[in-house]
Image (tube, rainbow, N blue to C red):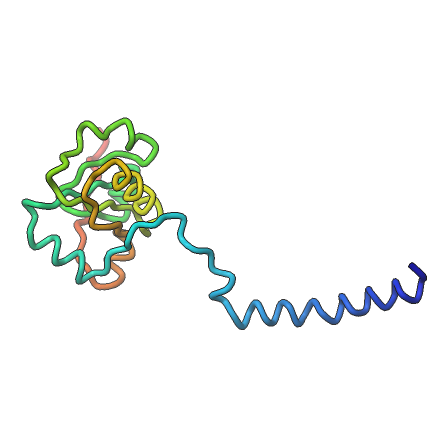
Length: 147
């Protein structure tokens, strides 16, 4: 490659770079990654309809206890972190519709996929923080005081 062709290549790259960046900025959807799960993320009306029949519903919250106390959650739930979920399958009833919970539904989506693959009836995933910001009502659980 000659010096003049090398200079031309550098100039072309310098001119093309801002155009590529502008194209990415004008199309943010192209930069957004698809979720790492297949589960349906429940909307506020969908979850509220499920909550209306509590005897048929089981919330499985895959967050750490400190996340539940800092963000809030649902009044009755089975608490198991995502890493321990597969080891806890024997404790989960198969006769209930399951809603998995995390803060923004990412871990909950992965948990829902796992449970679905093991034959559980999963309605979907929900992010407690997202649900509340979208108008849903969650319980704010006060951490016990340390003595």
